[in-house]
Length: 390
Image 1: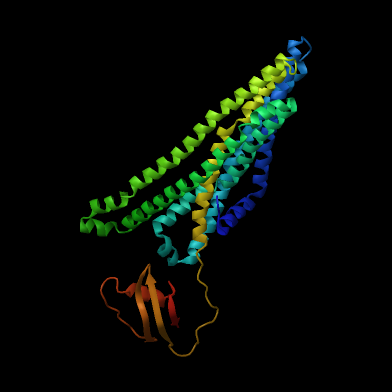
Image 2: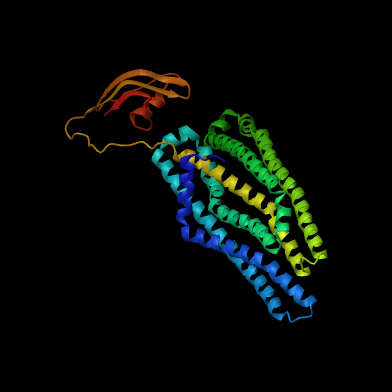
């Protein structure tokens, strides 16, 4: 999935903000995967000793220790992931809120108040899961890779049997990531439209009540719901289809590994414990369902971060450091000022001088540009052409 520099920088800054915690989560996740990879080998060794009626107490204790270790690491991983998500979300909200305040009214003109709230609340929470999702994805990748390596250590034919389906799994994951990114972007965009319409209606509650247009405004707010529903169903359909395909392929690969292991067992190339370990490693290697889930979460987080990046990409106004002269009332002057709203030119080549101490009344029909001219005078917005001088 492509990512613009603003979004990439935002996610990098978010990861640095909780760098030690993120590093600890990565270490715990990798340690969990490592303990999970050691357990099948220990189980296989214990089984061989028990079948040979040899002392197996040591290996049974090793298996029990690994199980307890996995339980403790899983608890640590849960706590670290939860706190990391919370800290990252708070960091993103502070950073984007600060930029919105620096933008001033420009922010609502560009995005709308409802859309800004949706980005600061919902999208920031989703983007806040990105560092944790990266750590989880690292562990999810280490499991299948470690499983394949372990199969190769037991016997190269086992790894070869599994790798026959690796290209198909790679295509499934790539297709899922691409389609999920598009669906999530559409879903979040429609959410922003609904939020903008709702915020506008809440701000004009008295006017709506006085005009008796509550039903009409409710219909306007809810009008994008079918589009939101389609985007949501399409998003879950993409993920469900990818998971179903992965789940359909995984048992076939597991069956191929077990069949090869059984054949080697019949030829005395493997022991019963090796077959047990190979079966467990094949399960780890085919853990594509977990990988699909983690990849989907990361795609959703990065798509949400892109919406935050759009806000940060808006340039904040710069202000000079010169002071007004102490003598005289001065004057406000507009020279050749033009300003647009969307594709419509509202003010075109306006020249105006307002002497200091003057009360000026500006009249005109709705949409003529009265509020826009006042905003230009107060530096609440900038002209598209011309100069505003004080």
